[in-house]
Image 1: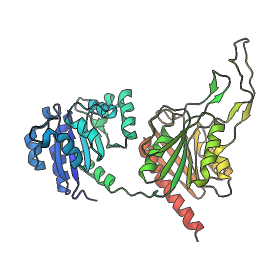
Image 2: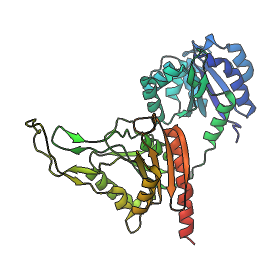
Image 3: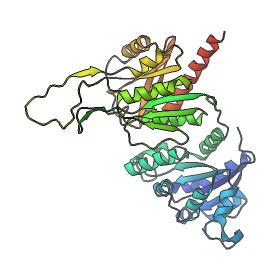
Image 4: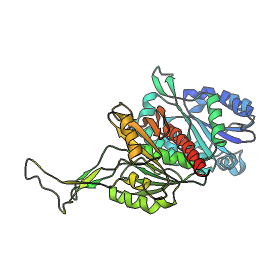
Length: 405
C-alpha cells in the first residue's frame, strides 16, 4: 500500500504530541505523498514552522487570510488542493470545533471548505478523552464520515495512564494507506439492520423498554456502509446520529419494527438483527393514564412476534445474523437460538461483564454458526463491528458459493 502522488494537508493543533509531526511529515513524504502543513497558534508552541517547512518542502500556513495567497484566500486553495486532510494531533478543543462547524482559524476553515477525505488523530488527557462532551463530539464526527485514528492507550505527558495518546507516526501512515486502499467487499450488497430498544405502551404515559443504546447496531451500519453496502437501519428510540450514507427509519414498538422490516426485507442480501426487541407487550393499552389506586397493579402481557425468526422462516430469506445478550450459559443459549430460529449466524455477549454491552462504547462477542464459532475480544464497538462484518462476509460468501455448486 502506498500514498504515492497523494496530496495531504496536515493540520497541527496545540498538543504536546505536535513534537512528533516533523517525523510524521517525513514518513508521509517517504511514501510518495506531497504534504502541506497548517500550524495553528497553539500548535506553534510545540513545534517550529522552520522544521516543518524543511521536511515538507512547502511553506507552512498559519493565517486564515494570508496576503501571499491567491486573493488572500489560502483556505480555499488548500481545501481544493487536498486529497486528504489529516489533523494530528487533534485536541479536544479542535474536535469540538470540527464537530460543531466552528471555523475561527485556518485549520477549521479548511476543514469546512474541503471535500477531501478527513482523518483525525486525537491526542489529549485520558479523562478529557472519556468526558461525555468529547465522546458526543466523536460520534458527531463519525457521522460526518470522519476517520478517527486512535487514540492509543498508555502513559501520558501529564503522568496519567489511559486512552488519549496520539498514534505513533508510522501507525498513522499505515492507517492512511489502509483507508485509501480499503477494499469494499460489500459493494452491490444490501444490508438491513435493526438497532436499539423497542417501547411497548402501557398507557399514554408509561411504556416497557430495556437498556439497549443502539450503539452496536449503529456501528455495524457505519462500518457496512464503509465496506460498500447499501444500508437501511431500522432504529428504535435512541439518541444517536445517523451514520453517513445510511438510510434510517425510526420506529417505536416491536409491531412497528416487524412491519417495517417485512416491507424491506425481500430486497435485502443480509439481515442483521441487533435490536433488543421486547418479548412481550400489554394485552390492552389503557386509553388514559393508569391511576395509582391500589397497592398492587396486575397487567396481562402477550407475546410479541419474533422478528428474526419470521425473517429467517421466509421462503427465500436473506443471510440472517442474530444477537443474543445473555446473563448466564451464554454459549448454550446462543446455540439454541441459532438452531431454533434457523439462523446463519448469531453473535452473543455476556451482559454481566462490567464495562461491556448495554450503554457501553465497548463489547466482546462469541459468534456461532452451524459449523463452528469464533471469539471477538473486548474492543470499541466501532472496531468490533468491523471484525464481526468480516466474519459475516466470509460466511455469506461461503454459503453462496455452496448454493451455486
